[in-house]
Image (cartoon, rainbow, N blue to C red; front, side):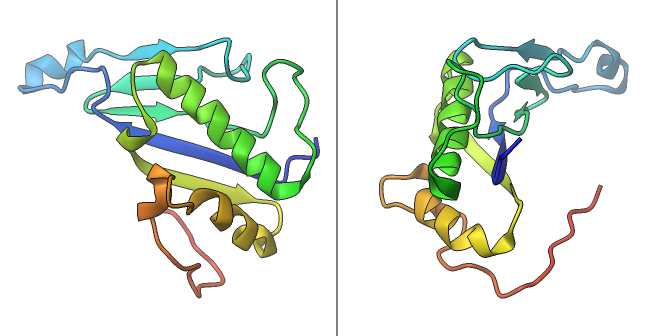
Length: 143
């Protein structure tokens, strides 16, 4: 696969029910959802809601109509990842404004500037993340 970027997101106000008491934690509602308007994977669902959050599976730059990775470089691929995320959000009655966390995986860190141009447009609700690329050479997310 020729994917240069992969993007995943977490949405606030998930459709699950937060446990209020210890005995209620066993009845936690977990909802999984898929839409035909974004690429589907046989091994996972596109989104799982629980507690106050809805976690979206990482989206590759795959056109859901063709099943192929979009051509045009990392910018076009980042746009397709975001289009897939938007389609999933629409299917669960959420919007890009509800996104509270985004993780981006790149095949080449030098492509971050091109991805930033896609993410940080004035019309983009994801523009609040950070205005300039970070100077760090490595970022490790805890488990």
